[in-house]
Image (tube, rainbow, N blue to C red):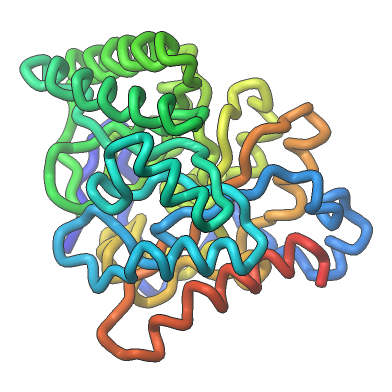
Length: 334
C-alpha cells in the first residue's frame, strides 16, 4: 500500500530499480566495518547505559503484528544477555501497577528506563485525551523509577502504513500539545523526547527539521526510523548534538528502507522482511554515531531496539535473543 504524506514534505516515489540511488534527501550511508570498533570508544561499551526493549522480542501495540512472547521469557533473556534496564513496551504488556511492575522487573535484575507513547497531538478535540494518557504513563514511569517519556506524534490510525496530510493549524496544535505533555512529564520529574517515527507526523527529514525549529523539545535519536524517513542520523547528531535526549540504536537494510520511503513496501511488511538488522549488519554508521554522541557529552540511555515481527514458526522464538546478542557483541568489538 502507498503511504500518503504531507505534500510539503513528501518526495517523488522511486521504482525498485532506482530505489537505492542516493539523492540529496536520502544520502548514501556506508556500513561500519567491524574493525572500526576496535579503535573506537564504542568498544568500551561497559560505560554506555545500555537497555533493551520488548519490541526487539516482537512485542508491539499494532493489531495483528504477530505472536508476543511471555513477559518472563522476554525479561529473562534481556537479563541473560547482560542488560540491566528496559523500556516499558506497549500498554498492558507489563503491569500497570508501579509496585507490581518494579517487582516483576527486579525479579529479573532489571530497572525501568521509560516508555514510548504514540499519542494524537494534531487534533484539538483529542489533545485532552492524549494529555491524560500521557499523564497516566508519566505517573507509572516515575513511580517505577524510570526517567524518560518517549513521545511520538501518532496519526490516530492503526499501524504505521498511512499518514493523513496535516495543515499548518494541525502542525501548530502538534507542537503545542507536545510542549504541554512535556510540562506534565516534568511535574513527575521526567524528561520528554519527541521520537521521529515511520508512519507518524514527524517522520521525514523536512518534518524533523521543522520540529527542531518550532519546538524546544529534544529528540529521541532512533537511528533506524530516521534513516527510513530520509534523515542521515549521523549528520543530525553532528549538527544538533544538543538536541539529542534519548537514543534508540537500530541498524537498517537501506534497500528495504528506500522501498518503504517510496511507498512500494509497507512498514509492517518491511519489518517482517528484516528491514532491521543486528548492529553492524546493516547500513547505519553506528560506531560513528555513538562516538559523536559521546564526544558531545551525551551520557544517557542507548536502548537496543530491533523492531521484530515473529511468526508461529518455533524457530522465530530464538531470533530476538540471537539478534540482540549480535548487537551487543558488535558494540563490544567482538
